[in-house]
Image (cartoon, rainbow, N blue to C red; front, side, top):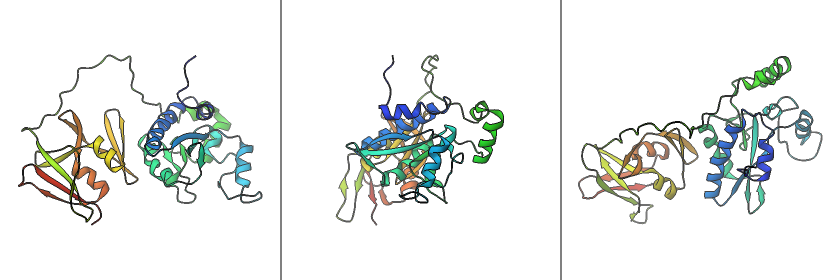
Length: 283
């Protein structure tokens, strides 16, 4: 019997989802666990499929039973009732964290995988919630399942695009090479108390500063996601697709593309050798 990928609670909840939806949420949990671990936390799937009765019981909270309101959806009005949605829980040393700024920061990771994130909802934001993007109203899903059965819902779930290890390995694409040998760039950080040198690799190629994005994400607390050879970088709660190339065996991106997300002030001196890039994030 194969060893479960995740802990018992997450695996139990994953098993309640539509089989075609499960790979999407496994990919989600992998990404969120990586992010959470970098913050000293653990991410789990704490809720998945719900019966209509269970949904009605949640709807009653803060209305006819004690506790705060947790949902605006009655039974049959939630994607949880159709086996295509999950709620994530964050834990610190086995202590559940119902509130944490990291729920909001993790949202773009799910969106980068093609899922709909409840944190974008204007009427009732639900930052721990993720669901399959069907582009259908819940009333349409309800009627579709009632009249045509679960197979009609399954047809709306995208097929998960996972890399196939058994496929023959294609010839590697040529690595983009700079026109001239790259010049190194010294990176400094100045928060108003004088510039301090950072141990971050950077190069000056074709009139642009390129930085090693894995080192960059680690230093500044970002998260890097690779999917089908493309990279998304989550910084300051925002995720963007970053064009990359290879320099000195590092995956690199233009500093300008990264700073389009961050919006930091910076100064660049191209007359010095090595050239210098000084970041002023607080100015």
